[in-house]
Length: 555
Image 1 (cartoon, rainbow, N blue to C red):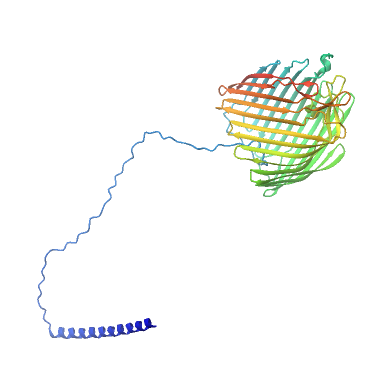
Image 2: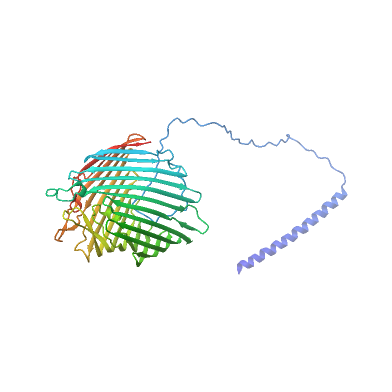
């Protein structure tokens, strides 16, 4: 309140003073005008000049810049590079990506296209491998591969030989890739699994040789077509025979197609048709199988789902089988949950059974094996060096062939159809890789077979096997490999049907190769270095310690 009164008083005093100044100024002006009118004479005035005025600007401060090159530094710098290692994880298998186009690889045009690898080992073992091709930089690529190995063991008639010839070609057009090959394989063995102390058998009774001739042709689209469907049909014709006039011919067609509906979601369908005819002196068997696999596939960055069915026709019978596989990243790339419910058929042709057991005797018409597997597991990477993969499964085998010794000598096997066989399976892998120079992999499989319906035991099936393999490369010239393996024995029945088990095995394989220059290298391989004598099949003892070495030439 007091402040407002004081402020108003000041304003009033200021107004009075202002009016007084105005009145005084007007009076002074009127007075000067009156005096000027009375005195019109200009009076003289004296001006004293003491110096001439010369304005001077302050001197500007200038920057003196002199251009000059720096002194030449002759000291060599010490450069330290920290390049992260490129780690390749071989044991982890993510969902594969299907490329629409595969271009020509011109990075290896300077590589040698041909090579010869030859060597010799104990047990009179010659080895020869030849590879010829026109290179990888041509639109039309073709080549020839040939290999031979044979050996004579310390046991009478413990002989075997393998010959392989492959002629192949591949052509890239603007929109498609075409490939074809013709293959010939010969596998010679002798039925040496008999008691050599009490029995002498002529060569004609123990000699066996399997011959396989096949021709294959296929194509695939390499660019996206108008309808957006990817396809890869493949045709294969195979003729399989032995020296006892058993012959089998198979025609196989496999045609997968894929159509992407929206991003990351596709419809896939595979058609498989396999038609076989077996003949010998007395019998003729037909074994046909057809299957169609429609499914929906979802491929997200951390999620994969393959959901479909597997309708299958085999020998006039129809089966609707499940086909469901899922992979989910619980921790991206570190912990992946993998699970599935799948079912499929293994075709029991004469050729397929011989591949499993080459000492097979007579072949009878067998049903194809239906396999149903329910599994779950985890896989992934621990860090940049370690990978792992585990799987626990419940497996059911329907009409699984088992192998038992037949004949009075016990040196051949006959297949026995097991109507129903169940098993728990545990599979585990652990891999380590340090750059590309050092690699280790530990893997194992364990089966617990139970509830056999036909046989007392799973004859001829090995329930456990494990191996530790490694590779070490020194200065890109010396390559060292090693493989330590452990095998359990397998069950077999004696002449009275009582079960027995073969001995297990623990042994070591090792190898080394040294590259002398770009064209020449030497190599040495040793198998069964612990010299363990085990039986993969009852009465058939392994060779034991064997060493093979030689030279390799590239040109």
